[in-house]
Length: 166
Image (cartoon, rainbow, N blue to C red; front, side, top):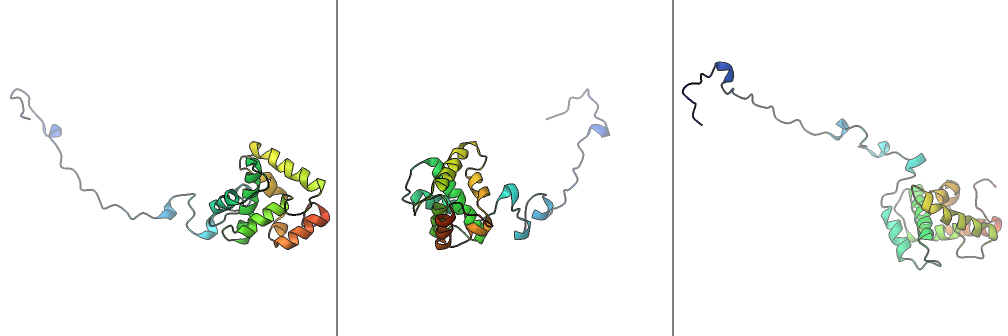
């Protein structure tokens, strides 16, 4: 646009040459706080639980299984136990993990009243939990959940409630 003849433009008002920007720095994930960049930095335990490579597969196993009850709260408990067992073993969920979750919930054998009451308590807690099934996962000891289905079947059938030290 042209300049009006009656307006004087001083040197301070003239357009300045822009300085050339330096090239962008290379991005490095270690610059951002809170982002794990190695497996050792991934949080575990406490509120984080135990991570597993593909926890979503545990949900698929539960949804695809022929369960004795179609209650969505039971599905949440079984999925949580399945994923917790897989995480404790450091791998993705497999059908054996679901079998263990069913045994811990009192299915697959003649369950005692104590086991059935515990299962009902776990199911009743699901709507009130931040992570559905965390009550069930918190009550089953890690030493118990990593055992084979036959060992767990014997523990639950013999004592009712599996615990590491009875």
